[in-house]
Image 1: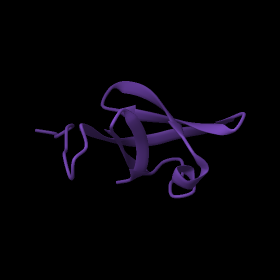
Image 2 (image 1 turned 90 degrees about the horizontal axis):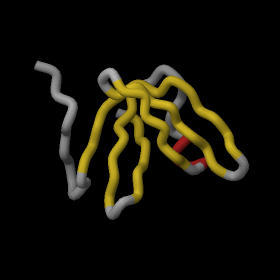
Image 3 (image 1 turned 180 degrees about the horizontal axis):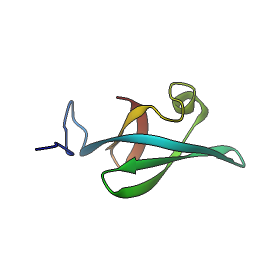
Length: 72
């Protein structure tokens, strides 16, 4: 059984996926991520994007309604 929902710390949710694409839109980045069979677009800043690259496993989690993307 594959586990999609992981919790560590106080995140409201945390999903693991694969980073498919990074798009720069004006002053922000959009990280296109495959989570299960869903494609999710996450707004990210330069510091988050600098830690990941296309093709790597990442976690998408949120705290206080602020999503973030991190290396898995």
